[in-house]
Image 1 (cartoon, helix red, strand yellow):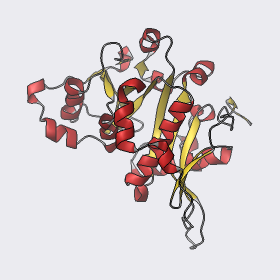
Image 2 (tube, helix red, strand yellow; image 1 turned 45 degrees about the vertical axis):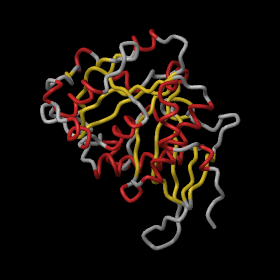
Image 3 (spheres, helix red, strand yellow; image 1 turned 60 degrees about the vertical axis):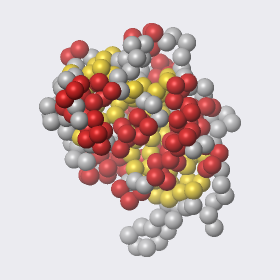
Image 4 (tube, one colour; image 1 turned 90 degrees about the vertical axis):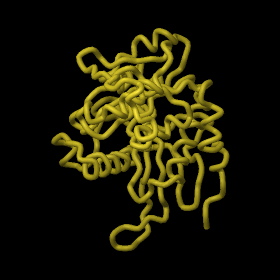
Length: 289
């Protein structure tokens, strides 16, 4: 399949993997296998990021009501589909209700690099771990009515299946805090800086021209309980499995957020990951009648 940015690398070619990765009731977890799957994920992202979240779409995105990004062409897309969803006429019509975008190290090298490299200087991280295989997570998105434990766990079990299949050594990516005023986010940013900063061999800084300090409050000034409670659910989810964070933040005005860099070395998080999200084989249950 050829598009504006070349062949879609996400066309189904995962020998021994998927595309179906499991069921939970009427919800199916699967990898995208065609362009229409990606378009559905883009519509979901538009609804959540732009209509619900208040991000500012570009002209093309607003016209077609999809979150269009050139990286979609080279990424794999993990989807949760509700096969019991109904359209506005009451007829059953399967709907994408959750999505994650996955970019493997070798695919990034062959194409545009990692998406997060637009904000963060990840070159040193890659150089420090020349024999490691990285997986970038991005565009995490779940429809409002499905933001419960079941859908999130399905996505994370799918990610883990993918990680083990491709022998990934570390997951990386950007995570966002709502708002573009770092001073208003001082408790959260300072909490991550003082209590969840990555070890030196894993730490990543923003590009110099985009660097925003996270160390905005002294450690003793941070109300740990309150700061932790005010973090976005995605960041708290990352922290539960042992994720660590970079040393600076980036303001993304188009999306109305402040981004931090996340790193999750697999050998450091595996036990906690399975304990919290469950084993992938738990999803291999029969489809509900």
